[in-house]
Length: 203
Ligand SMILES: Nc1ncnc2c1ncn2[C@@H]1O[C@H](COP(=O)(O)OP(=O)(O)OP(=O)(O)O)[C@@H](O)[C@H]1O
Ligand SMILES: [Mg+2]
Image (cartoon, rainbow, N blue to C red; front, top):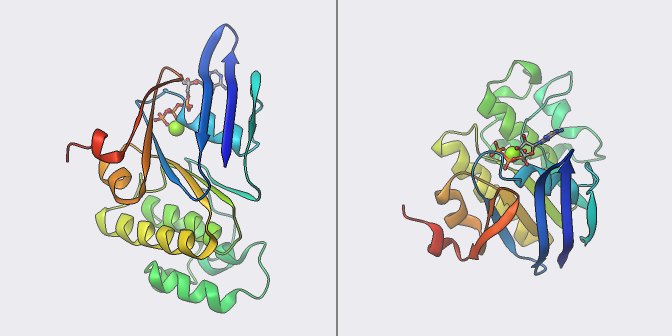
């Protein structure tokens, strides 16, 4: 269960997030939607412990894994990047990279990847860890349709294995419809709508 109470973030006099109350059931997958600058990343970063709220409280199940909006790579190969911080996960990593169709890139320098390849790599790094709450900031924004499909399939596999809750931001109604049970829409930092993906999607 995730609970937010009177959560606010201000920069100077400007309030960029103002959520009086939000609860998310354990195991749910919630899509955060809303225009550029509406506060999605701010909310995810607060839940990830990367940003201090100006006011209010929240509770979230631990451990939390966070995929930032901007993917990054460490120095080294794709395989080394995926294995960072893990132990005895080589076999698991190889099958994961196979499912994500990154096997041909295994020995390539991670910093030479294309945007979509890098986003898939950053996502794979999380998939080898344990999580009670997965926070994904626009996880498919750089992916082509096929890569997005692979990534979302892997996400569903991870959810089934770990029973974790997921909060993901997206500008794609197709992504929300495919994986989310619920959509929460932000507008200027406030929740302006909350419903099922079907209520939001006009595909
Ligand atoms: N360090 C900062 N100082 C001042 N304003 C900031 C800072 N960080 C974010 N903001 C502002 O907060 C607002 C919310 O930003 P946020 O990144 O949460 O939006 P978003 O919904 O994730 O947008 P996008 O869809 O473009 O990723 C924006 O107007 C942004 O300019
Ligand atoms: Mg953002």
